[in-house]
Length: 389
Image 1 (cartoon, rainbow, N blue to C red):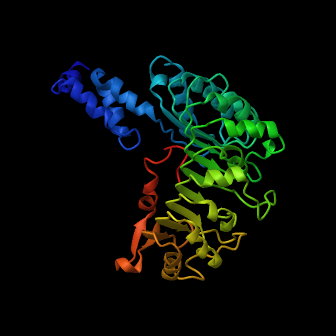
Image 2 (cartoon, helix red, strand yellow):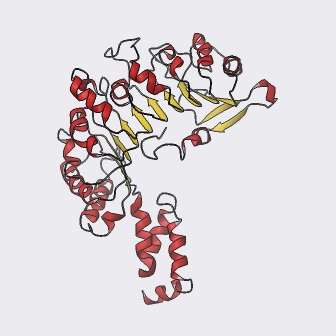
């Protein structure tokens, strides 16, 4: 190790540390691992970056791959065994509990202990909790103060509103969603006292992602900048034309960036269009012929993204590649939205690219742009964990 240390000493230690700090825990993982193992001089800064946003590879479909089962357990044990150092480095943590795991009980128990050690955590997103009846135990006793939080269990609404979220006074980005239909905060809707509590907690939210029940509970009284109105499917629990409450209507007026709907369902656009007075960017799943005229209700709209819907969409939203040609779709939108800079249209579901159209006045041809470029607007505007498209 001494020879390696002498090699590293050819550069000033402060410069080495600054270089290491600029590396990415995702893109430069191999370099960071090599640095952490090669010299004690750069071990700590390299591990600090590696553990700041750890990514645990787990192939859920590879049930017979023992290493894929042991890898997350090994990571959690490492965190638990280093509460004074490695656990303190973790700032963001994302984990999807696998549906099938040989040691799921051990994995859950270790996660409970490891999360309590991550006292400096700022962002947490956990999903895949449908089979965990005691999932709130993951969060009970944790002392971290989050800025971002996402939770994938449908059964923990009361715990969230009454216990966990009231203690997260610094929370700015919130994602509550279910892994199956008919969830959200439905359990809270008959409980007016709990619903009123939801209105009051998380006063500093600027990002909110969730189903109708989540929005009804948390949006009123907030000045949310980015809103994603989700729905896993229309299973009859939600009325076909739900009325937007006055509190939600007022809060919609502050939204600047919005994603409306998911691949197989979204409510009719007329329910919210007249309330979107500040929206600059709108991503909408499909667009009915009669809905384009509603774009004139959005006076600040600059960018429109039309995502392709599923083939069996119960709302009947047409695929832009089908009934309407993409250019025709764009021309119709430009007609009603005078401030639009461009429109991105996804030709079919899961397409990795979009067609970008510009107003005729700019005399620019259409372009093919990657999905990554289309969604680049989200960087730096909302939470890095809860807002992924």
